[in-house]
Image 1: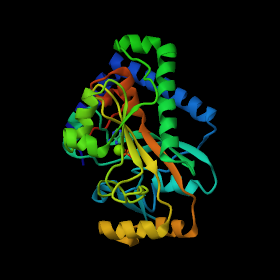
Image 2: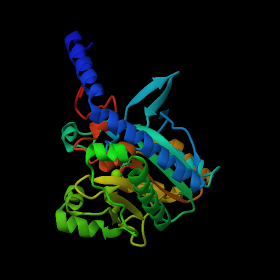
Image 3: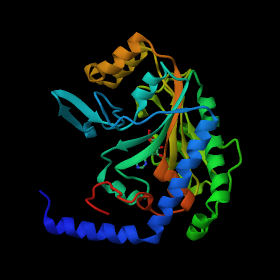
Amino acid sequence: MQNIEVIKKNLEDIKGFLKDEKVMMANRLKSKIIGFLRDFMEKKEFVELLPVIASPVTDPLSSPETTISFSVYGYSLQLTKSMIFHKQFAMLAFDKICIFSPNFRIEKEDLWKSGRHLIEFTQLDLEVKEATREDVMKLGEEMLTEVITRVLDEAREEIQFFGRKLKVPSRPFKTVTYHWAYSMFGKDFEVELSRRADAPIWVLDFPEKSREFYYRQGENPLYLRDFDLIYPEGYGEAISGGEREWRPEKIRERLRNKGIDQSLYYPYLIMLEQGIPPSAGFGMGVERLTRFIAGLESIKYCRIFPKLPGKFGL
Ligand code: AMP
Ligand code: MG
């Protein structure tokens, strides 16, 4: 039971927050950005699917212990942290799919200070059958440049309100390897690399040990055929994605090497055994994109009921 006084205080805070013009403008901007993203995906012939909120198995991400499970009709369900497994499954029916997918993740408590973490957020999640890493990186570059171009033209009032100086990045974006970024800035390279960059920058080839088991390994199996896109000016990670592993024997080997109990992923393993096509794709956080475009110090302004890590209320 929550204390009535705490609930009242929280409601007062939310009322104040809702009346903040910054919140109104950021959410108006986000609404336009979602429209521009949809137009782009439609032009590229993607089929938009609706999100899955709960299913027998979800992406463990780096912390399976923070997966939220509950029981319905005696069956165990998990809240979606990402739609990766569903996206791979959907490749049986579609060549190109996208979903505005709500994710619920219990992030580490102190990340409320990062300015870029919510525990409830939405990613534009997309997947392309038989695509390569390079194909989807090109798509990501086109998508970001088109959204920024349209914002500058069609969201002038919002951009002026935020006093944001934004330029359309030129393509192709610069790329660095994980190895390079790590050796330059250490394990928290995301922040430092972003702070020093004046244009979006790709980070490629994450070590197999550092990421989930569903990314495809490269020629050197210690590295993955994956990527992150990092925003400039300190706004941090924009996108994560890559090529997916679709061969069950490879996934079994990866699970074994990572010491993960295979029985936790039976629905996924059985799906792979029955056969799915290879694919590549990525996820791009919608609130983070809005934060970057508006130039906001905190992502919280990009949702009207933001949930920050470790906090009840704003
Ligand atoms: P991931 O697969 O974990 O990299 O998530 C895909 C994208 O969603 C990231 O590149 C971010 O843009 C966004 N994202 C991930 N975690 C969060 C979070 N806690 N709050 C807001 N956006 C997030
Ligand atoms: Mg990521």
